[in-house]
Image 1 (cartoon, helix red, strand yellow):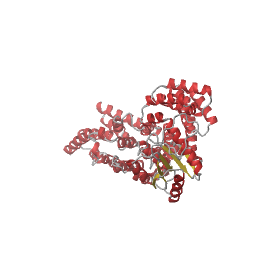
Image 2 (image 1 turned 180 degrees about the vertical axis):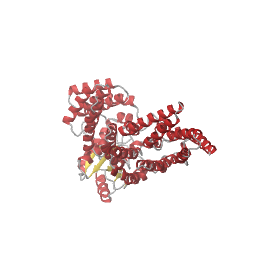
Image 3 (image 1 turned 90 degrees about the vertical axis):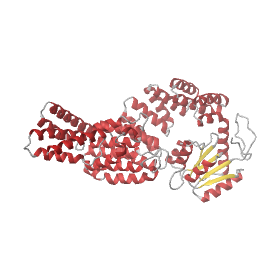
Image 4 (image 1 turned 135 degrees about the vertical axis):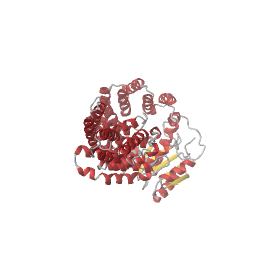
Length: 556
C-alpha cells in the first residue's frame, strides 16, 4: 500500500490517523522531453523522492506498468507522436494497471481551455500547468496522497467495481470526514443511478443541496430526474448548473438527453454541439453528437463530427471501425440527398484518406482489417454507381460467412448491412440485421436505422417492394407480361437486387416456353443471368440461381 514519504508532510486537517512510513514513494514520470525529465528528477529528489522511473512514450510507459506498479504517476499530456497522456491514462485504467491508492498527476504546457478540459475529463488527482515550482508540486502531491489515503475504502471499491461496497464506503467516509462529504455523497448518488436506484439518488442530492449549493450535486440531481422520466425538472436543474458552471460539459450532455426525451431534438443537438465546442477532445461527447445528427438526418454535421472522431479515437481505447463506417454512410446519404455529383465523385478520395488514418490502429489480431477495407471499398463503388462491381466486391469479402451469417464478426456484419441497404438488397440486409446483437455498438445501430429511415432510401425501397410484390402477384395470376414489366421496373429502382433479378429470370423462362419464336426473351434472360454470374450468393439464392440457369440451358 502506498504511504507518504517522510519528506511529504501530511495535509493539515486530515481526519484519519497517519500510518508510519513503510517505504519510499515509487514514481513513474512519462514525458518525451529529456530536459523536463532531468529538471523533474532534481525537483523530486529535493522533496525526498528517489525511486524514479522514466518513460519517453506511452508504449514504453505501458510496458513498465505491465511489469510493476507505482505510487505516483506523473504524465505529460503531450507525448509527441502517437498516444497522448490522456489516452495513456485511459488505457492503463482500462487494463487495471493503476492501483486504487496511487496518485495520478497530469501536467501540460498548453493552457488552452480545450486542453485543460480534456485533461480534467479523465479525472487525474491533480493537474498542473508548466512551469510550476517545487513547492507547488509538493503541495499538490501531498494533498492528493492524503485524499487517496483518507478515502482508501472508496477508491478500492471503485477500482474493484463493487457498487454496493462503494455506496457503503461513500456514506461512511462522508460522515467521518466532512471535508470530503460532497465528493462522497455525489459519488454515492452516481453509483445508485448505475444500480437503478434513481429515487434514492434524487433524495440524497436534494438533501445535500438543502444545505449548500454544489455544481456536481445539482448535475447529479438532474441526471436522477432524467432517469426517473422527470425531464422538465431535469432541464431546470441542469440549466441552473450551467448558469453557475457554463464549462461543465457533463451538464450540457445531460441537458441534451433530457431535451431529447422531451422531443426537443434540434435544441438537444445545439446543446451537444456547444459541449463539443467547449471540449473538442472528448470522444464520447463527439460520438453522442454524431448519433443525434444521424437520428435527425443532419448528414453534413454528422460527417464533420465523424471525421474528427476518426482522428480523435485513432490512438485511444475508444477506437472503432464504426466511425469510418458511419462516416462513409454519411458521405453517401448526404450526396444522395443533395443531388450534387461532386460529393459522390469526391467520395473515393475522402474514404481512402480516412482509411489511411486508422489503418495502423485497427491492424490488430482480433480485427479482420483487410475484409473491413474491402467492404468499405465496395460501398464506395456502390455509391459511385458501379453497383455490380461493388456487389461482387462485397459478396466476395463476405464469402467465408455466407453459409453461416451468424458467425460473422459483429463489426463486419454491421458494415455489410449498411452496404446492402445502399445496394438495394433490402431483404438480405434485414435478414442479416437480425443477427446483430442487442448489446452491439450503438452508433452502428443508429447509423443503420438512419439509413433505413432516410427519405431517399425509404422512397426507393417502398417503390421497389411495391413493384416486386405486384410482379409476384401477376406471375401467380398467370399475367406473365405484366409480371415482367413490374420486375423490370423493380430492378430499375434497385438494379443489384438479387431477388428481383431471380424473379425476372423465372418469368422470362415461362415466357420463353410460351413464345418460343420470340428471340428477345432468351436474350434478356441471358443478360440477367450474366448479372449474377460469378457472385458468391448465399446458399438459398445460389441454389435457386443454379436451377434457373440449368432450366435456361435446357430451353435453348
